[in-house]
Length: 518
Image (cartoon, rainbow, N blue to C red; front, side, top):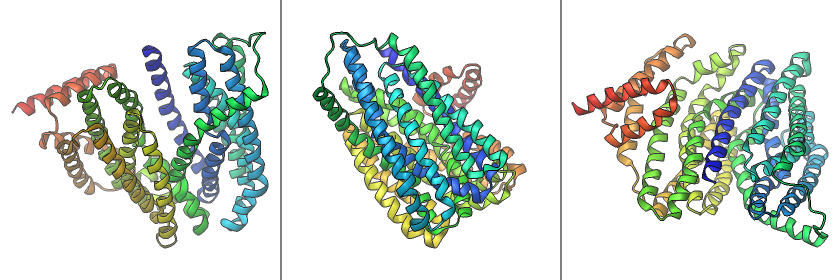
């Protein structure tokens, strides 16, 4: 079981990193091909696409995974199969309901009444066509997760993403603009449904056999099972919607007060600002099962060590990344969107939002620790409260400060969410905050930032500047005596997984040891 868990977690982790990069590539490509105005229209549809997909799924994929795994563990294959099909029926109904609602009710209201931008009508209506496909593939992925076949999830996501990127690019190039980009998304999801059904039909019978001839399952039994699935899914969907709103509510509010160009500038900056989350999500994925195991064994010393090191080593990389993104915001946008230099107008928003992602990264890691020690409702309450605060701050700041106001409002909300979450971690785990190490990281990052401030902010200086900042940050850490003996050993163990690069890392650590001894 342990090897199965580790293998599955590793596959999903690698898949998440690859597909997050793929998602960034899709956004960058669309931004370059569409230009600020058309990309702004696409940008205003993306939050509603995510919200309606989440509503249509009803929080059921995790419920499918949970109950399929439980039934399979005790050999109840018929119940596992019924779980999948019962949930699928609910999700198809929800997908069709919310799809029709989006096309005929929500999209017209948004385009004409809330946004006051009729150009957004057809793109928003196309969003309604995505939901039925997304919920079907979501249900089947829940089944794959329930039997620990995480690679099947990755396969279907690969088909979805490749189909979406290729189709969207082709449609945009032939002149269909934003509508073409969204039709590409529809085709991407429809292709993933085909792939998921093929995998389920051909390979899943090995793990979930066909139903027994003597198996009886009445309508009353199915209704009871459906109620169980829905009950489990309610906190899941609340958490998912709240998290999605925190990510996207600034764009939704901007649609009310700003032009499509402004939204396009913000949508171009937003995914870049969230790059540090790759590190925090990776650490959060690891710390959840680790903290859960230590908590279960009542090994408080190990739990406290995990918590302390999770904060310390995540901030070691995240803080300088966020500082660097803030300082090099303009040249970063200039290089990434080389075909449309107008996107540099989003530099200030990128700089502000990058700092906010430091707070959100800490919140993400804290959430995983709290969930790992059996308190999932605490992050849910904080997320729901954070969504309301984010919405209120954006509604107040965006009309006066534009996209910079949206970035500032989101950053403040992330900070306010981080505080109670971090407090809960230290209180529940009885861990002392690694204030000494964090202070040294902040000081080293400020030294690097001061050095970076004097580097010319032009495209030609971006990569030399980044390389120089890495060197300055490394020596600043040595200067403030960040590296302790335990830290060096932990980094040495971690570096052994880097393949050929481990030799270089080891040489650097040997160099640090020599300097520390002096």
